[in-house]
Length: 195
Image (tube, rainbow, N blue to C red):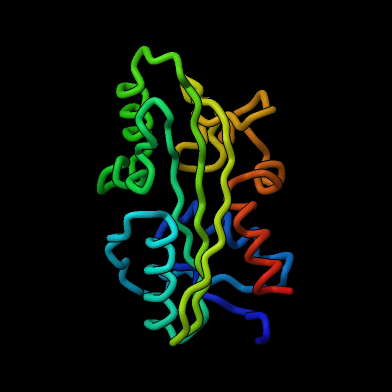
């Protein structure tokens, strides 16, 4: 099976598209967003990151006739029993206001001294008419309040990965790409699909 040169990234999130396009570029793969193609966002009805990613990739591949890559990822907080988890984007509301989501995390964690958290990414690759392949990555770290940094997107300003002194929101993109949950899932995708 030949590696794709062009694929649909099944997202309407500009931050996620930018990050995935930056990861794909060194492999000579052009990324087109589902939003640019006018594809609808399917309901994320799965009960896991892997299920949601597979659902989005299959829908984008079927609608576009092109190979598709979909990401479902989110923040899991130990003090909240793993929430927001698969509902990470929903916590940001219809306007996708992640400062609102960050305030909710802060409020719900309250005085709990356990600030451990982890990001999970499930990356699904689907070709039209074929079952999606899913690749998962995880990075552990600590919640930091107040938020720090304006880089990245989503919950990045409150997440400091293990062994680091800065949040993902403060980190240079190449450094983040070398260690993030998405980078770890992407490395598995590259090994299986692009090489």
